[in-house]
Image 1 (cartoon, rainbow, N blue to C red):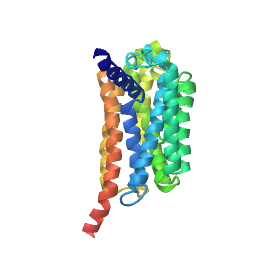
Image 2 (image 1 turned 60 degrees about the vertical axis):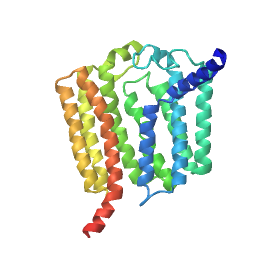
Image 3 (image 1 turned 120 degrees about the horizontal axis):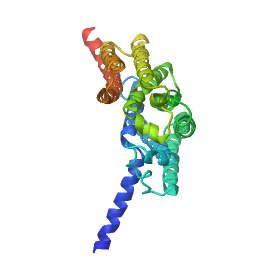
Image 4 (image 1 turned 45 degrees about the vertical axis):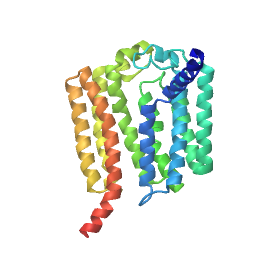
Length: 305
């Protein structure tokens, strides 16, 4: 009886370990940004069958990239308190199984995108996989403190994938959203790196706080948030959005700059944590406002007109 009960429990544990490799919270934000791209790509509601297939395909390939990242960085993860809990770092999953898991997810996601969405979305998503899992993880991260800046191009791709899925092409609207995420990435991750500096030092990674110090990194966070603020106004400038989004961009951007200013002037780990947490809310609420504006402004214009 006990053996019968142990088998399902062991299988459930093993699946939960594989699931943890996909970095679910990170993937949720990626899929959310891709979905925003899908919804903004066309007026009105999208073809839900197409959007559903695109969402599943992007989720699978992004999860594959996360699992591959865990495989490559398992030795580094063991030395960092933030990541030491991962199954790959604890040696709970053999490397061969992790690699196979990543390959199966990538192949399945690519197949979904190719056969049920379009070839352009499949190739762009696969390029994003290579950019994150290979170029960023294997090459950039251990070699240069600018790893976040250069590697951020891969993380900024989800809205582009969403637009490509719906339109079969990449327009300037998608590139504007890509630029916003690209500029958001450095202050987001450097805020984390500031209060996790000792973790990165033990891991031997050349993160900016390690190579250039805390004060220089905090200045970079402030400068990037200012440039990011300007970039978040582009959707309004290019008439992708209206007053609802503009108000959200001004408020959220102002708050992000305030956090960065305080971090630069009077550093504390608690403030760095708060800045990191707010950066996640900043991007999520900014894109949510863009979506709200997309669907509400036409109705408001109709009522007012």
